[in-house]
Length: 155
Ligand SMILES: [Zn+2]
Image (cartoon, rainbow, N blue to C red; front, top):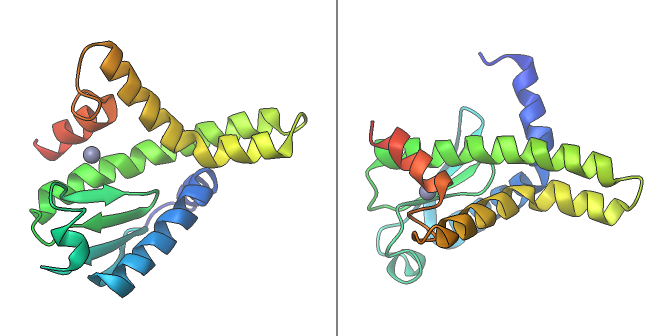
């Protein structure tokens, strides 16, 4: 049983989670199977040979959007799940940052506050990719979020 205060992580990630949970339900309805909650994260697995798996998802093993994870049918489950759960933790941290920045901005603008809260996880990921580019590395492979996820998953 997880401690009650773990639920506070969902406050910071709530806007991202809404997008992630709705996306996974849509993916399940159109191209997936095996939609289930595991330890507070909604997982869906793509059907083998589904249109999405054969087109957009040929190069990916998994994707995390907040507390929601999509897995390819081709992926090695343990390694991919470990990798995606690192991204879930990154979203939790950046969601809290977004919530704090949003709270600071709220007196000036509620729209800015909501934008900071909801977009901070994605913004942090994009900026990490931009930093990798500025170092002369790949946007994806040099992104410190991906480096951390690969390091944990390949342990
Ligand atoms: Zn990744």
